[in-house]
Image (cartoon, rainbow, N blue to C red):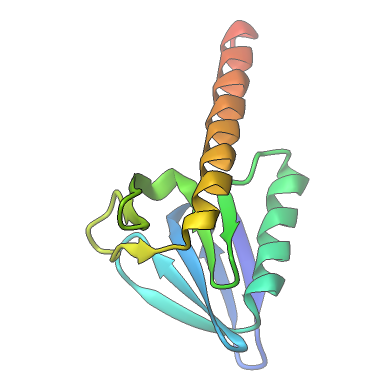
Length: 132
């Protein structure tokens, strides 16, 4: 899935499958990629959240992104584990540092992850039944 980001000076195509998470930084949003690169774009996290969510909705695919509080929009497909004692998200790529999250968001994250993977399994099973 790709997202087109335009600014006054350039047009950039972002491969959302390689985005581990987005982080708010005032009026900017930082994109953290699986290879460890970080790119900043002039727009709020809410704007990118809406754009990403709409992109997946148009494609008819469940979005793997989950909004965590004011600061993060996490791609749950990159979560390796959640340390509940320390409220830390660990990712399956060593190029991206762990993220500390609010305890209250962990229950919401768990519900989202359960629903996301349950829906993904149902879709995969359906496609296999249809011979696709």
